[in-house]
Image 1 (cartoon, rainbow, N blue to C red):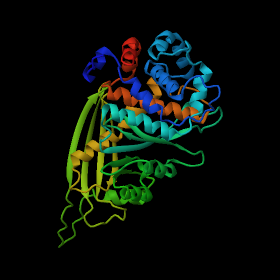
Image 2: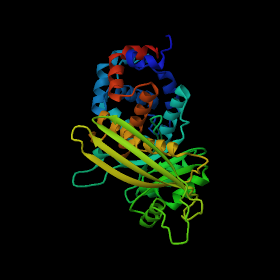
Image 3: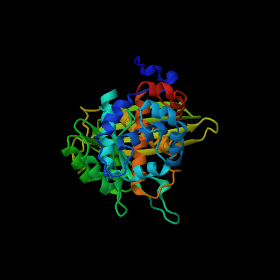
Image 4: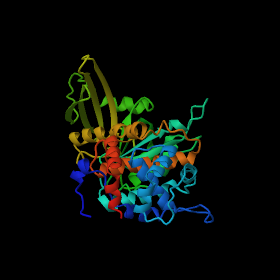
Length: 390
């Protein structure tokens, strides 16, 4: 079959190397008992991925889709037995994965081998509770912490946060799985911690942290950099060197303006591991219909020196940082119905989240900006997609 250019994907549909994906999934550890196995783990995972690409996000819908597409799938995969996995088989497969890190690693190796990339600088860490796992009468469910490349839509790794822990205690384990050399880690104010800063620097990376009320002393000290200099009689206090950048974006009925001021801590006034610069970010949103304006001022710190990054680059980093909400969480919650999928088994929930991460990353690599449109394109042209495999 002739190769299909990425720019043609929106009109032709999703076509990728299913054989290569199978190869990488064959390397994922299978802890199931050999006796009674009808399907290999790699085959089951490929089928689940195909169904999710076609828009079936829940285990029951996946099983139904496989049954409806049975003849096409049996032909494409040259199966001797003309059956597809039933719902209970799908459910048990998701529940019995040995190691989520192992699955995530091999899926990412497939993406890298097929499409390259995963070299963007900024890595955002952020957590998400899977609401479909919260029992009735409780407020706690499966909570996952992910390391995400916002520029590429790829989750490098995610780890489960234990029930009696929080994201801060899980972050060191997550970061330890990553190669941070030459990369910049960003996180919300929760992650503005000395120990995490030291770890990132020790692993060869840099950090960008937001500073909010959970670090009141640090926030007050950073804010002082942006206060007007107090001139005493007979003294001439030079202004601190600073650089500014701004941007404006319009869309979805609103205009968002951002202005960032970056100041180096040349005297080492702030006692923080590796700190080089501080910044002040002002975000103003104007709602076009009502003309209502909302403003927010956020402070931050970074280990990136003035020689390493400019105000314009720092502004771009902060914009990318917030991209995890729309780029990953929204797609998983809304398009892939993650929060609406009721799951009572933790491993099943974690496995589904990993597969959802892969769907988001794969469709981004294939040139789709809209995940729902990608699913419609795949379902409408399934025959073409499977033809690339046969």
